[in-house]
Image (cartoon, rainbow, N blue to C red):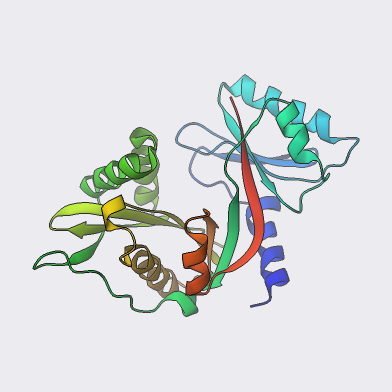
Length: 259
């Protein structure tokens, strides 16, 4: 895999010329900024910018005004190669809050779509169960709320919309009828990429291979649908696992939130 080539493709597909992520979302270029806006559960924020020392502060102020008029908080997704070099400090000075940095990682789907063993959990063991309806959506929301402290309402709304339009693959790891992990994969129609999200596992079940099995499951699903690459915004905890599985780090990205 040519890292520079894949990063350039990712930048074009997801930052400079992205499609709206769901019904109701609007992607627009406002000057030197590409942003997405939309009603909940849509993600609101800045995807890409082409700024310099002269234009950055005014562009930041304009995005704050735009989302204030919509009455929503938003995120500026900053990459380590974005310019100007002090854009991070300018965002902080404007009132943004930096979240933990993540690593943009990509792998060729065919390399990851391999069988993965699951740990035993009593006589039935751990089973991977696809999410096909609202009962499964509720279980995914339960796991994410328990593991990540995430809003179950937002997760439930988003996943329900995506299931209805066929733009997601979601899966649960069940042990003795109890969900111990959950993950999803967004399918980006018209692109070469599927993106992995979640993978949250109950603490007592970590370190047993469930995360790896969830990655492999989604990779097989992506391969069957013709997606060439898998993309992850990896946390510090998941990056070593993904590296061992064959993912390559292409950039560092930090979410800056406002509101």
